[in-house]
Amino acid sequence: MKTEKRKVKELKFYHNNPRKISLEMLEKLKNSLREFGVVEPLVINTKNEVIGGNQRLKALQELGVEEVDCVVVDLPKSREKALNIALNKIQGEFNEELLKSFIKDMEPPDLDLTGLDLGELRKLTINLEKEERSIEDYIFNKEGLFAFFVFGNIKEEIPLELYEQFKKFLGSRSVADFLREVVKNV
Image (cartoon, rainbow, N blue to C red):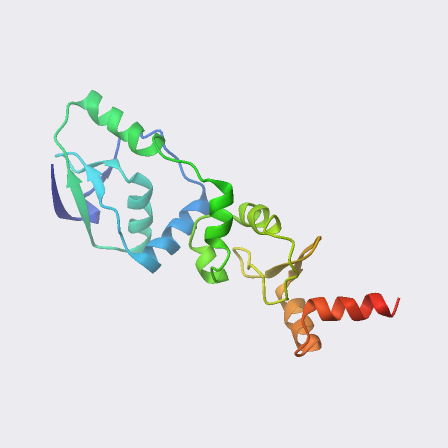
């Protein structure tokens, strides 16, 4: 096994690769590659067929990347297939409580790079401790058209334009202070 640089245009997708990727996840993968680069080499055979990293290859092609590090293996076809499946199947899972704690202080643009979708982020952030949060505690969805914030049991996704207007209206007040004023005056 050795690591070598290969031209992306010379690499081939593995024939009948059973792994697939949605357009949404492909965009997330491309965003990650733009931000962090290729931090994990592709795994290829001696014929330049990608055993592990077919989705990354697709993203790299679309991004116009010219060269990439590859781990070259020389295995019988049956072992190549086993490696292909193992690289995509054998993986850990998240401990949700630790993941909640782990993402708690991350900035929204960085959360977008994690590959977690808005539904997963909502589930994790809504269930964080029930402390009051200000309007500044928001998460943008993938299109960047909505802001999402949590205040106690109030969970709301609002158009970004409305969020900006609301933020101006609030001035230096927090959402918590604003809602207290509203409740007082009802």
